[in-house]
Amino acid sequence: MRISKLPWSVRQFCTHVLAIALGVILTVSSLQVLPSQAEPAPTNTAGDAPELIAQRESPANAAIGSSSFVTAAVNRVGTAVVRIDTERTITRRVDPFFEDPFFRRFFGEGLPQQMPSEQLRGLGSGFIIDKSGLVLTNAHVVDKADKVTVRLKDGRTFEGKVQGIDEVTDLAVVKINAGNDLPVAPLGSSNNVQVGDWAIAVGNPLGFDNTVTLGIVSTLKRSSAQVGISDKRLEFIQTDAAINPGNSGGPLLNGRGEVIGINTAIRPDAMGIGFAIPIDKAKVIAAQLQRDGKVAHPYLGVQMLTLTPQLAKQNNTDPNSPIQIPEVNGVLVMRVIPNSPAATAGVRRGDVIVQIDGKPITTAEQLQNIVEDSRLGQTLQVKVQRGNQTQQLSVRTAELQNAS
Image (tube, rainbow, N blue to C red):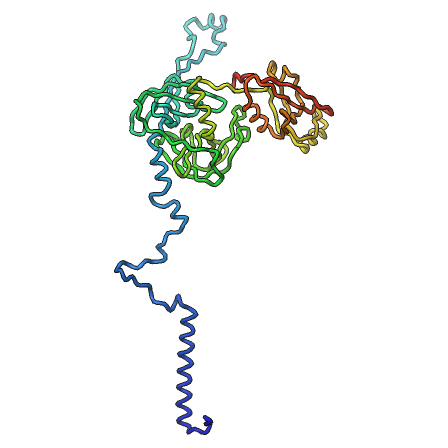
């Protein structure tokens, strides 16, 4: 039956019913499209308060949240970290001008022969590596100290005896007599450290005892030459964990509370950059210091610079350059120390070292590491580029007597 043939009142009723039906259909469709607006708030049948989505902790906050891994790491090692106070007495002589006979005859003989003594005090950190009371710290913390005092976290103080110092690696071992049940810092492995790992520095910066700072490992194998301390032979762990004066000798920890480095160097011209000696290197040096009181380091006796063909070309095109340099990759000899193994073997200023024992040499750090890993008295076959000629020299290493 056609709708047009229905009475007018019936047709009007059907129109209203159809409009209502369409409205219901559209409403249901919108609820299905926007469930977040249509669904009721979740209920908790157990009777507890409903969990609000906004209160859920993000993964980033969970990593450094309350009772975090930092707290656990510090609790694991904190009692083994010590404060080291040093005292040193120095006496300054009077200026030689005042010792001149004419001056003393004119002003009298009552002038002092020397100035009054002066007391110098220092502060650093360290950590216990053996229950017998062995403490590892930096050499510059205790070097030339007349008195060393070690203070534990619980307040006990002990006189420390320096068992050995190695200036080349800036490491020292101090012994305290405090029984055989001291807390010991767990030592990790720096070989397993990766850039981006957590780094936790513990120590006594600026005299503020038991201070903890958090950062990450910024880079690895940062050479001592790059850091600006060319008299050392080290490849540092670089970190952005805050390190300040007084942190020297304290431990750098990983996220598990294991010592991965020894805080040692601060760049005065940089903010938020510190350096630590890798613990694997420190383990070897500490064992030698405990046994022998010193560490023998082989050396060649040259001051050197990493050379590239570009740097050599810049030098050679300079009309004021005193020498012409081979345009090759290698290590340029800037100076040969008199009476050194290199001088005895015939190494000259301006030579470019390109091989040692058949191994190509491209950086000064690489050459230094090879020499450091060699034995005292070992003969190294050194290939140098001298002008347009190649020379093969035999250099016998000797012991480095003075780090400076």
